[in-house]
Length: 245
Figure 1 (cartoon, rainbow, N blue to C red):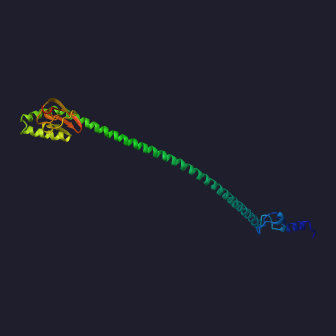
Figure 2: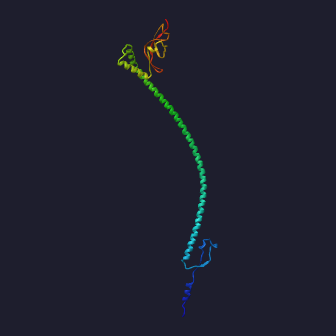
């Protein structure tokens, strides 16, 4: 039977398709090929499982090269960072030393200010204490001076014999005790008779010869005097001996 060319077409369909593998990485070994090309091989039809396996192997190789490159870059960056850290550490040490020096100077300045303030406070406290004591003494002396006329009346009553007993005698005794607690001292006939005359504490009202009392000594007290410590609240009025006549 005659053929009409179908046999040739059938033979062409039976022939396998060939192509040249130009991939740089060998999909079977994973190594780089010399010359960048590979010999032609007969493969199955396009899109076969063998093609998919080769493409997957090539992708894995490319990823391996990328991973190596990234690792090398990380190592280089780490080395640079280490060198920079050393420089930064040296700079930080210099700055720390400078700050420490500045801090020491500031601390010394603050200590000086503190010592000055402490000295000023001590002086201020001393002034306050002194002023307080002066004010207290002034108040006490003013109070005692105001009571001197009352004490004169009590002395006159005592001299007249009106304070020998009874409630008034008890009140007068308690008042003397209280005033003695404030430092008041009475200079009367009993305490001054025969004592040397002191113009700073005594007021000479009369001078006359005396056979019994030496010259410039007190013979008699006309009015009692009062002192508190070294301060004379009122001078005693006295008669002074002029010696033997």
